[in-house]
Image (cartoon, rainbow, N blue to C red; front, side, top):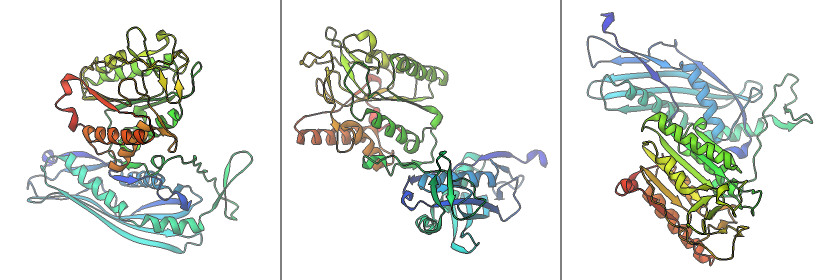
Length: 463
């Protein structure tokens, strides 16, 4: 009988979309405590009536208490709470955490959590209970489906809580945060044995897309991104807001598109050697993952033309527009991204290649715009470019971003990243064109795809 008992690890993960930083203004400081109000099981399978001979042993990975505390820390920090031992105590008591398989009904997951926020004198300030339940028709031996239902049920149990009330309540009585001369931060709540509180440093908000960045708990482990913002040049005029463009896009890549932070290389003012190294890294990833990787390349900065060949180049921060030997040929970038098979490779270039710049001309400019030639991409490559022909990629000064980058990220914000490349392209092209025409300087973003992708790229998504 024992030999017929199946086992499997259930990989616990917090999955679902939330809006980041929505409770920042309350400055609520809390300390999370997790209790398990039942004997922690090695098996979270409660009922299994698909086969009378065996019942699978489904082991939670990681353990329930570890998983819940880690997830709550992550969730609450993302929505704007400060997590610190000096804060008010938020206790989450897990009353139920189980998976069932019922013939005719499929997999179900149930999670029940009781929440209590306590004051400094242990008085109860907030209480709420939540039951998360999720079901999915599926195969009795598909333990990935079992993981999906329990993860979805757990997210429901967290998401049902009135976190606004918790934030308002905690914000009124949370310890004040003060910065000491030695840069250590302490909680000032008239307690002698208070542990340090981390200071929340909020950068000045320049635009609506820099806040309320949607968060997904979907993890796209096989997606890899290089994001470059070249703003300050050794030999050329500055590219206004390029660093802000790249920084915010990196936030959307991690938070909204679900790309693990370790899979994202974000570089400001990249030199020639650094840019070559990052492109080589993406090429190495594509080779190692043997067709299973998705690649993302974003660039905000100067582009430049070769006057004789009309070829387009990306200009590193230490490059010189008078010499193409100091620049990265766009065609070679495309070749690198398509050298090895990949599921998808997407490029965003907020740059122009005519010799113009966001605020004037490059140092080598002759006052005459050059029409760069269009490169034909290969493989599974889709390229979004901020301009057409000899147009200029303009800044959106009011939003402190490039015009193209602003509307690109605006649509990622509105759609929570769940949008086809075709719809994304239409939105960006329409809004950039309308805004630029009103400003008297027309700009028309373009999409260039490989022949292999002509009939399929429209339905692809970044997420």
